[in-house]
Image (cartoon, rainbow, N blue to C red; front, side, top):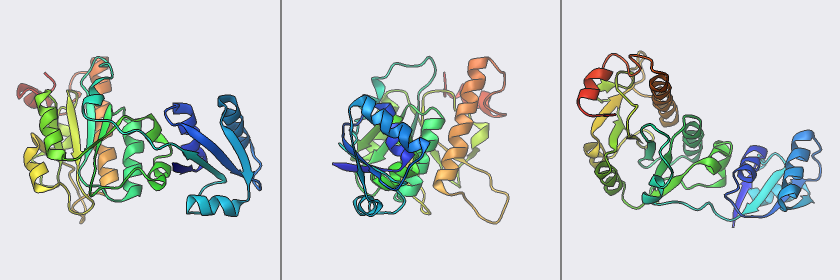
Length: 266
């Protein structure tokens, strides 16, 4: 069984309905409307709720940052690459996110929160050398992970090659990339690949990418934190997709038409 803690993660797991709850513990010392609403939702869904001392919740969660709510649930079911294509196409290109060895659970959670907000159709994580979907990551995502389709793969390069076979463009983010992210058409079928904290993309993953994009930096630091960089590019992709849906000309930036001639989004 897994443990979820925090008001948002537990509430979002209840709302998504994809987890099987065993029971929810709430701190006997906490009395407020948010907690009352969560308890009412639990009872509506037939989830058992018990009051316990805050110290017991801290021991179970492994942290005092549980906000007086801890849930014991079945682990989140992770998907395969094939599963990501079962969802119906929404009428525009698919946008996927692949993580190449992101090891910090806070960064993982932040990226999952961004992915959900930007309308990502699926997230790909690796089985080894990456942060698991731990309670820390779930908490950092503010429960967004409960609404995402997450696939776990053994070999990321092999998975990216499979995506290519399905006409998905593989777009890596690298500080030495040849094109600024906002001058590239991100409206077609594509997967954005983000690398490890500090080290970036593995060399073989980098060579597998069809294009490498960069975020121009004006200061003395050469790159952004991976979760911040992911937010910048994913929301640019979301902006372009909204503009394309609204029929706005020039949605992909000055280099968009040039990239479309190469086939992206065609």
